[in-house]
Length: 312
Image 1: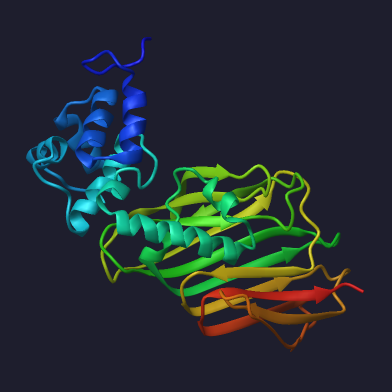
Image 2: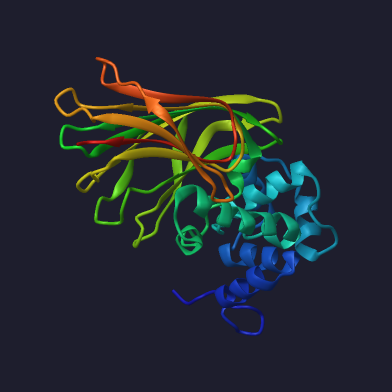
């Protein structure tokens, strides 16, 4: 099938790519709709299926440049348009909210710091909304790491209670990477009260980014409870630490590590690294007969919170 073309006979996809880079918003939206060959009625219907509301008249205004999206309701519709038209996350939103996009770029650096990765690895997650998680406030986050008898990280389960900061929040992005990029192939095993949407990986670091879509969009102030578990398709990585990087405060952060009864560590410690790079090592942690240790941090500040241990 021939590629869609503009009235001048130029490749529509190339025109759209240029418009998504430089704008304006109305030009990008028009080309995206034409590329899909959809009527405004069909676009409106697709947007509605994604839990947003926008009239055909408003779509027409946006498409012709007579009006620009404004307000939370409109931004929610723009995000639904991106999904409906097969565009990367924030592709249209960045054209109407350059400040918001700059925040997303700043977030990439903060996320790289939280994950102990390079910014290039984060930016390889094309189409993932790096700033999306900041639209949720963390009431509690419980990460439970299971260590096997071979001293490897077998699986990591995360349970979250969050509150929507704005209307229309409908997803959380799980960012996860193994201790080294050595063919471990982390993968999403199970989810509760959410389902996987976009998935991206960085081949070098094996960073895994998965959009977990909620059962329904939230209103500002709504709470939501969800969980997910990460495992490995390749050999699980050997490890002597478990950590979680926070970009925003959490009312309660709990990191729990369970060891095999036949291979307990000699001792365990807690640690914390601030966003500015300052590190602190606190007291030794107890390890009881259950072979489990933990840290519980009320009003946890941004930064990397973790547990390390010594095998010998």
